Each structure stands twice: as structure tokens, then as C-alpha cells.
Image (cartoon, rainbow, N blue to C red; front, side):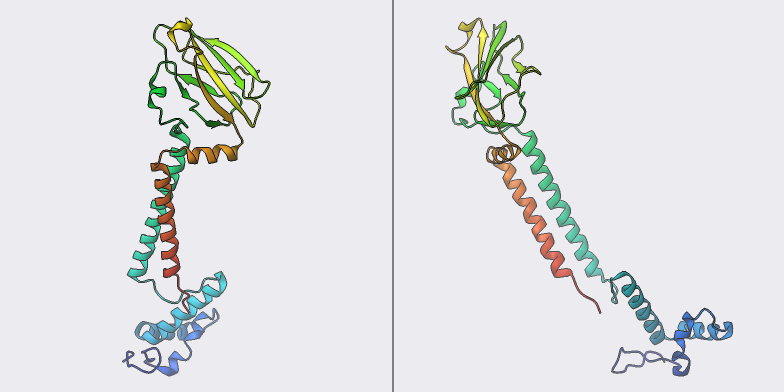
Length: 253
């Protein structure tokens, strides 16, 4: 029997004189008759098959730099699947939070004054205190019933920039030959035509043209509360996946 237990790996060669020469199977010049004898020995000898498997794995490991001598258990496969699920879920939540950060309108700095955003003529974008990247931002506001047109003024706070225009729609983008100076604060004022349809002096909004860094910081601070929660959940899942991967990693010799 080849399954007699010993103090080593638990197996014994059924025919040691033949088993000692099992390495010759790797010799391409081996006599065919001897090759058949050694191959027949492998069919019935667990010890020699184990030895051949170990030698092949060691050879592949030394060649590729990845040495794996144990078969992956079902528990190991399940552990890796669970880790991949954590990575996928965390990545999805994090990507969703970043997409929402870009697409969901920021909260106005004067969000507590609910009546401001509901009145006719009030600005929709930019919201109060918003940081914009474009030098030609798109301005939008609530339509004023009965208005035939709107006058729009954009001025730099404490600076020389000033522009005014007219539009029939409740939105406007600055002309191509006009651009807001970077790193400056601005105030936009919209007045309906005729002016008595709106508040005295029109409705206004303050905003800033900032750098990409300023824009990201502002969008994060002004994001609805559920977006940071979504991002935190995504990061937590990714951290759990990393911890699981570290626990499951083994050096198999």
C-alpha cells in the first residue's frame, strides 16, 4: 500500500527502487521503455505523484516569482469572493458620491432664507456663495410673470470688471469675448422688464470664480449631507476589503 503513514508527509513509495528514479521523466532522452515503467508507477503511487506536484510548483514559483504549494481551499475562494464584493461595493459607493458631487446643485450659503429661493426672479445658479470654474458661467433665475425681458449686470466686488446685458429668457451666458477674471468675487443682479414687476434694485447673487482646488473644497462643503455619508460608507468598505485581504494573505512554502 502507498498510504502507509510515516513521520514525513504521510505517504510511502510503493516501489522505492523505481520511485528513486522518477525524476528521469523530465529527461527528454529517456528510453521509452523506462519512461513507460515510470509513468505506470506514477499511476499507483501517491507519494511520487505528490513529489512530482511539489517539484513542478516549486519550478513554476521560482520562474514566475509566485510560489504556491497548497491547493486553494473552498474557504479561501469564498474569502476572496467576499473581498472582491467589498471592493466592488466600496468603489461603487465612492464613485456614486463623486458623481453626485458633480451633478447635484450645491447648497446656497443663505439656505436658511427659504423665501429667497422661492420668489420670482431669484437666482437658481449660481447659488449664493458658489465657486465657479468657468470664466463664462451660465446664470439662471426664476421667471417673473409678465416680464418681457431681463437686464443682467455682473460686477466684480471691489474691482474694475463690469458687464451688463439683456435677454428675453430667464437665463444668460456671458459672451465669448467677455470672461470673468480668475480668483475674484462677483455680484450678479437681474432686473425684469418692466422693472416694477420685481423688487427694487432687482434680485442678486454673490459668487466667486476660483481655482480647481477652491471649487472642489467648496463643492464638498456645500454638498447635501447624504453625499459625504455615501463617500464615508464607500471608504469604509474599501478599508474593510484591505483588512480582509491582509488577513487572508499567506506565504505558502
